[in-house]
Length: 109
Length: 113
Image (spheres, rainbow over the protein chains, first blue to last red):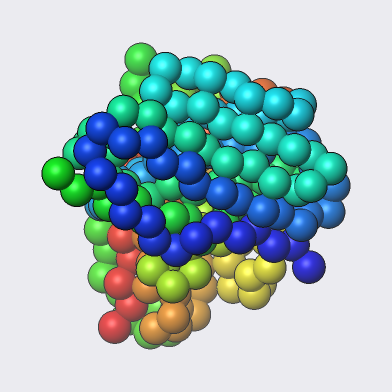
């Protein structure tokens, strides 16, 4: 079966750095996505990785290792507004996009 | 430009009824996907349509169906509603087959009583 694993919850302090890990086992691979979802709102696209390595976009960076079936989302200079769920998603060989259950991040002052 | 529009926003139905949800993607987007989101299960994939063709289908019973029209608007239908169908149904559109990321609508919150 297809499986995407992320930690359920994480807590970090304002101004700090947090790394949210994602491991996946899917039928093939055609890209990995990270989305942010605030409570009561729709998910919004953060990043896309299809090749190994680090993609940086402002305070957010995403890393991919296809051989290890592993990705992480790195959030720097945490702000209170970063409190949200972070969803890892993988597009498989058949171009179906499968989501993990998400990681709820709590940023405390 | 207008985002992804889903109607209605909220819906209350009785067990056994059927329901139709609508999604208008961003202008120019030809790919539309549907997801069911529940607190315990996260986002579960329902269908993906591209240029009026269903390209992928998730592991949902046949009571869940969908279609896409020539203007890329999409509908999904759930027949013989069950209590467990209560969820947020999200529609997502993207520009073309090589998805770089979805734009999600605000969703339809369906409650089955």
